[in-house]
Amino acid sequence: MHFTNAFIRGKKPPFRGVFKYKDKDGEWRQTVRTLKAQGISEAKRELAEMRIALEEEHERKAEVAKATMTVDEYLESYISDLDRSRSLERSTINGYRCYAKNVSNGLGRIRLSELNAAQVRAWEAKLLKDGLSGTTVRKAHVLLKSACEQAVQADLIPRNPLAAVRPPKAEDPMPNALSERTRRALLTYLDAAADTPFNLAVLMALSTGMREGELCGLRWADVDLKNRTLWVRRSVARDNGKYYVKPPKTRTSVRDIPLTLALAEKLKARKDAQETELIVAGLEPSEERMSQIYVLGEVDGSFMKPHGLWRPWKALADSMGLVGTQGRRPTFHDLRHTFATFAIAEGIDVKTVSSIMGHANAAMTLNIYASADADAKRAAAMTIDEVMGRRLAPQELRSFA
Figure 1 (tube, rainbow, N blue to C red):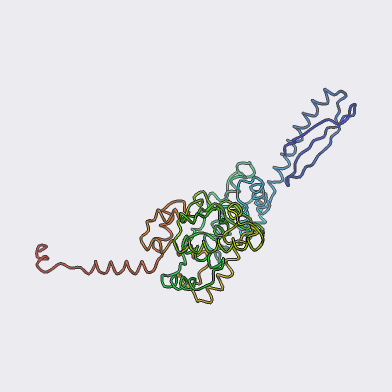
Figure 2: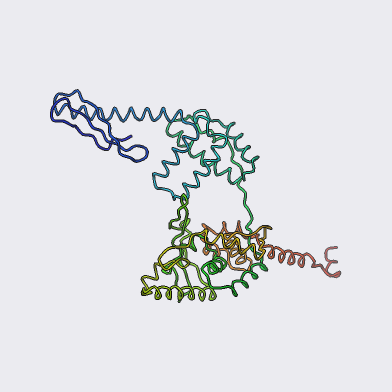
């Protein structure tokens, strides 16, 4: 604890020292101590000495309290400190709290100072046995390891009990993209369907590979219809049930994306419709006003929430009987996978696809999508079959005798 303000109250003995500080929740508190000093100069020296003593006393108590904390209590303290630092996105903090629930399931009541590698291994084995994926358990492992590392640096525990434990291997799930035939069926449906924000979002996801939050966060200021380009500059995310606008997922997620002619025409129709809505409402559809309106949102400036895409997509996928390449109903996010899969299968260079997708590098794109298209694999098998079927003529074979 740091006493941000300390002063003397009273003009004659007995003087009192007032010490103000913020508690762990950021609320202002104060403590008052009577000073022994008989003069103001002596009182100032005593105030300074008492301030140091109080801070040291508080630190000792805090260290003792942390040393007796359970894993649950320490992890909550660790995540809360990260949250207060404002160094991480709220969605990231919410993710940590979800991983912490998995830590609690098996380790939560153990004292941090008593946690050992054997307990960690048993905990991970139980989570895997209970059906959690290796990726989920690995994320909980990484969170707990980071928290324990901080505890080591703070001298709360002598060593990190997770240092000797290898986390489960994260799975690399194959993208559940739409096949060529299924994608064509969906596009055929969209050609005949009404021009709604949802149908536009489906076409945009298929044509650009944008994430749901990025689609919802797109404003007209980010769209250049003349040059058929849009810019991904923000995303809509969720925090404790409330949606908010934030920067894109990573630095490379801030990007420009080329528009197909068909998509540019659909976007132009959407913009015209919103301009008409403004006129009907008695408002001027000026360039400045339009620039702040969300493409998929309302003319009052509100944005579409991602669940406004998930629910109608589930209904559409069910009604059309859509099945992805992994044999299950595709999610809306699988439209992003579909874009990348067919783009690579059609020969678009991986670096370009990676840039459009907002991936950190082309290797990431290759690892996920290079072999995900079943039609491309069948075409490869035909090519291999044709090559392996080639033989030498009898007269050419004599040279090897």
